[in-house]
Image (cartoon, rainbow, N blue to C red; front, side, top):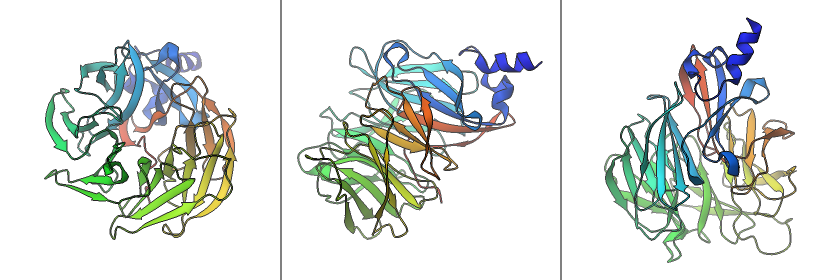
Length: 363
């Protein structure tokens, strides 16, 4: 019986998740692989068992670049946005309970880091940081059909639907509009914005009440924080940093208890900055962490409870994603290369909670 239990945890994508004993009551990390030989597949790790790999779900062929992941506890579906090897923007839908692909469709004119509505019915899919389309697509999550376009700016990149809403959108537009963070009402689709920030925005993260947003900003060693209720923006600068320009520090997130914000450095610098957020409008640098790979990083997020932080290597790198104890800040090891990760908790074989690819606050 013990041998059978071990084997069920090592089965490949043909195993049914709901029937696997090790998944009936567990917190699992679904990490979309970036390594060239399995890019677009999903490695599933048991968070409570030292992040042991329990299976790899082989999904779709021809994945050139993974762009984002989102999932719904309501529907039990997981979605991955990716560029195919031909360059076409695609999204695939996975049934979490049986590891089967339900649909895999092109989304014109492109895709980027997507978000999902709380009821799991709609996907909000940016058209891509390298594109010229001045809208994002609203997609039927059941079919992959585009049902609406929301217009505001070009080069749309990272889309987030935080715990308290609304839909947030950042762009890489270089006509001045990329210095604003956009908020989209999920009912009326009315668009408002916060800014301008000091430069074009990069990754960002929102707290649980949608009161504050922390932002990577082009050409800034540090971060900017905006009060979403008043529009006030402050700059938290790093005084001790590597020589040269910042470029774009890439990766930022709240610890789930919102006591800290973790921020990656630039692509070739192996540091992560931990900010104390007792007063969100007056952050103070708490600690600087050093990555094992000796190089840079491109994304970070946390598990749902805030026990672990995951710092991803540079895009499509073969370096592993580093796991930190989020409370002690100690490095615990590596999993396979992934920046598109989402924690999923199961109780009695049913999904109870789902995390987020962004480091959102949960207090």
